[in-house]
Length: 477
Image (tube, rainbow, N blue to C red; front, side):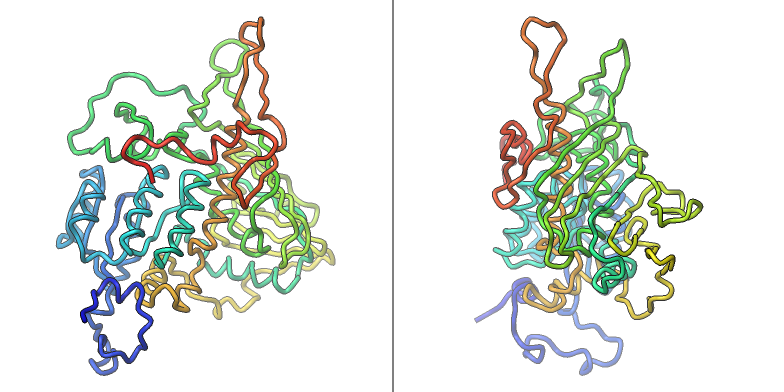
């Protein structure tokens, strides 16, 4: 009987002393057996994808065997660095042709995450998927269930989840230092790309080095436009998930993890308007708004034992200083552009993006900073590298269970983030008032009640169209 290298890496439960692998100590110090290396493929390899591939490669601890990007010009830096790796423009061709691949990093625009990850998982390949894990709630749930079904190691690319700061936040909350948390305020300066603008128009010649059909993937078929690729796709619902999708998995992660939160039960949104001509705001349902305010409510968890109200603002809007924080102390990042404040019965905990710079202000006037809390004993920060090591250890390994953002955790977190977008899009739904020109009612501008288990808004049926998307023919999950 033979066993493939891929199936061994992914699903083997054989003891470490099995004859299939020669232990390192037999081969000599510093020697790494070929079987200790993971064969990694990267899809979407510029921007964030460049660092995802490099960090998973981990200075030659692993192999990069295949690279794929729809934009061949932007792919050049990694194509040249890993010249021995197969080079592809269509990830479907890559997965079909290269049977040596053990694991795949996926760093494409949001709308392609689920299609690529599902195809890879169905082939038994481990997946690292950039945040947010998916474009919509249905995809996040489907991917979470698929990772369990196919027994693959998974990780979402919210790298701050593995930072010492995030681990310190969890430790402080577990110690009960600020008591039961009842309110969380989160804010970001995103979008830092055009958002709240009219739909791009005009005819544009597609560069010959871009495969636009593969870039579109499951999204609605539209002509190439440089207003979308690269980077600016984030502000359009056809492709992106807006400011909340870009930063939510980074900023919401701290309280979501530390407080042991699950699915929210209620969500409500309000969005900023854009006036271009006249005294009526622009109506651009295809695009994300310039700013938004979202409130999510969670029931008491086993960890926190208090209901939690989470307030999110973007577009540069943020909540105000809690009374316990001195007026001249920053909240969140040093420039206050991104941050989190958790308000509890005994004090306030604040931190910056990626869980960095956590601080506590107690009701008795004391201040606690991370430097006083044994930071050297905290786990090393290496989000992609730890995923690669877990892939080699296998689905049932301790290494997999210890990952900070496997899909079992990242799925519910992503669903929470995407719930805010469901509320934003529901807010824009309108119905003409009969007999009154340019007058509308907006039935989605209310608190929405969410049944998380069944992925359904129970008090406004039209909102449920945003739980999943319409998939272009040939691109369904």
